[in-house]
Length: 386
Ligand SMILES: Cc1cc2nc3c(=O)[nH]c(=O)nc-3n(C[C@H](O)[C@H](O)[C@H](O)COP(=O)(O)OP(=O)(O)OC[C@H]3O[C@@H](n4cnc5c(N)ncnc54)[C@H](O)[C@@H]3O)c2cc1C
Image 1: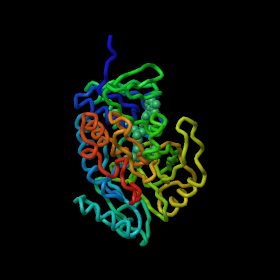
Image 2: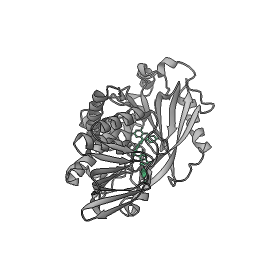
Image 3: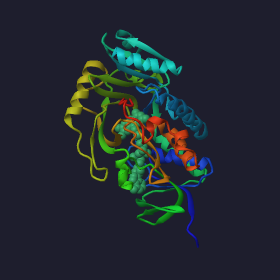
Image 4: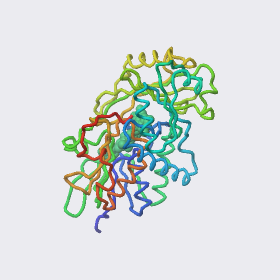
């Protein structure tokens, strides 16, 4: 009997692979998704309960993508009957210049927002203390996106429309033949018209020469939680406790209200170090804890900074310029790639899945992928995606 020829094989069932399976299945392709680990594993980038979602970005190319992302996440909320996003607001704390730039970008796209200065910040958000040197931009649509619920909803909807997920099956090789792409795993060999590689930090292990096109690097990152010791009600989701991005002297910190752990906020520093994703992660460096402790002591009076209540080491995948890499593999355009999301890709995944599906259905790369994310992009503007 002839081997089945799959419409699309997706390598990796993180949020990018799951969203690609969701769109591909809804559009009548029958995706086969191959994932090396168990469902819900914590070795990649997409596990846990919460991520930040926001319109506000330093680079305006993200704003139209986020418009589509909000619409697509809301469509998915309707389908699964679950709240996937809590728009409790994003507060971006920084200096006057940065705030002005971010506000101008949101103005250009008619996105609701406000700017606060010094004590006005504390009046709006009594949980925190920032003095006259600080500016705050409030992105009213920002907030928490529930990562675990999004993973489940995209996978459930994909399966409902005919996708098949095979967990604990590791892809060893992808080979091009004239009339098909061959995917060899530790359990068998599969054939497909199209292959989408959404393998996170393992991208270069599957396509080793991809590094010559765009360098992507798996990096480990610390996630730190701290106990709320007072004024608990100000941190409840119902109190509209914002998510916060803090830029100070070149450091970038972020805070999410207690979603992952009871009465513990997530407050950490956006720094990472290169790793091999197949090797064990190393311990959390004490200097990171210290840096965050100092910030909490100065600005978060209700938080116990004496020691972290929970710590985790996770992985994300960086590109040189901090923007993700999307497109067709130059050696074989039937293979598409979505990688290098640089610690800020979760909220975009529902659009990335739509883009990879359009490519699998034959769309031109230039119609589908914004220039900033294409492999051949110009790198003159080196703005952090935050
Ligand atoms: C600490 C942290 C905080 C973050 N904060 C935010 C945030 O606030 N907002 C935001 O939008 N984003 C955020 N991100 C980024 C976001 O979570 C990632 O961009 C996103 O999860 C990347 O998804 P992915 O599917 O590309 O990768 P992954 O989730 O790593 O999925 C890749 C999958 O491919 C599988 N795989 C790899 N190789 C193979 C193989 N050979 N065979 C089979 N399967 C394979 C892996 O096992 C893995 O499951 C954060 C990330 C981290 C780690």
